[in-house]
Length: 238
Image 1 (cartoon, rainbow, N blue to C red):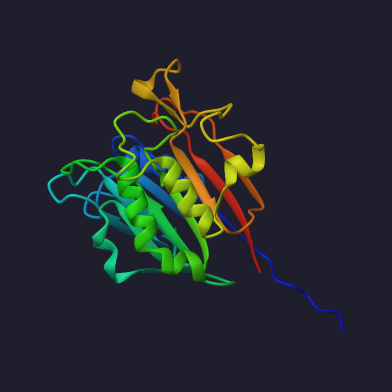
Image 2 (cartoon, rainbow, N blue to C red; image 1 turned 90 degrees about the horizontal axis):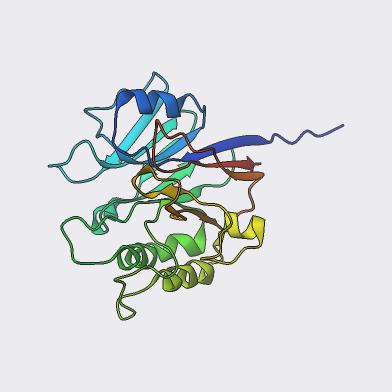
């Protein structure tokens, strides 16, 4: 008897939407992903999501329109790891669907209210959740607010190079750099335009995983939506 293997394609989009409006959320949801990682989105009381979707949010209560949100279709089961509040603006999640559970670390290190640097906050999160990075299929994704050669970063508290080393120690590889063969800090494209200026490009958005995606791309710049470009991932989940 012939056997059939069920292959499910899961689409994940990470997109810093740069100042929440419902119009922007609706625009991004029209990309029809199974799961969205959305820095700079309003909290659950502000955002309207369609029937069949769920949402989780973390951020500062006094800035309800600017936190980190994850929205997903309900055919996925998403569980928040209890101790998530230890590292602000990071969401550690277990995502379950047709295949093996995925540990997803949504990242948006944010320095508001702290004297810590972006790489320092990211490194703290990576070390905090190293147990899951070691034991699960894993994806760390979002606006890392980090790049090679970043000014004002102390070596004593951790650089972005340290973050990359920590990720690679757990078998996590940057999808963009794996696909292009380019070195960190030498990217031929960009994911962010400072003050919406195409002449001020940076590479700030990353997707690190121990899984090989079916496809990975950085989407087009939609200046009316954001100063960032989206990351779009397709996974084969067997």
